[in-house]
Image (cartoon, rainbow, N blue to C red):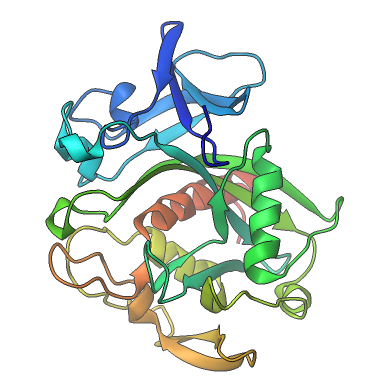
Length: 298
């Protein structure tokens, strides 16, 4: 079922199901055509990542969402012939929150085939029989060199995102199709201590940043797909500190905050921005953060 050492998504409705097919919307299997989100139960079973409309042993209930402009949604029930016969793959991305409240995002290397120069959390494909947390910790270490010791962090599943690349049909037919599980890892360590142990892989990461909550809130509020450039509210700094990775020598520099508030253009070349899925995950992070600190929190 997994094939090529990667886990495929299995959709189960009413007790029956099968492998999700590349080019057809997974979210659409659980919601009405005019909707873009659904409550699902998810979990690993026999090397497959299962999404179901009812709870099953070992499953977790969460939200599954797609963007309104999702190519798999717009292709409908009958995708192009060249897109058939391939499965939708499962992946994991990690929102790492330091003890200081900052969250780590990385900029994907320019040479990567999917979403180059786009800011995302560390993450990657799930392997057969690999639990979600194990995937997240492995990818975090492979991409950033950061290893988290057991007992120094807590974690939870935030939600699931249907990711297609290219993200818009105007950019061409889909070439990659994933369901991404976003995990929140809350470390006890301040970001300064975590950063001291960072050793990013230059083949995957071209820069990283520890972003403060007010910047993350603005990113989460960005409406992707509008095709407009980012504008910075007066409450935000004009730039944020990032570390660029090149030639084995990290270099601290400043990035205009507006870059992180860019939206995906409807046509033409992509721009440096935060991915739509990351915006979704940060929105869920804000909801979780608000619930933890309560209405009287700072």
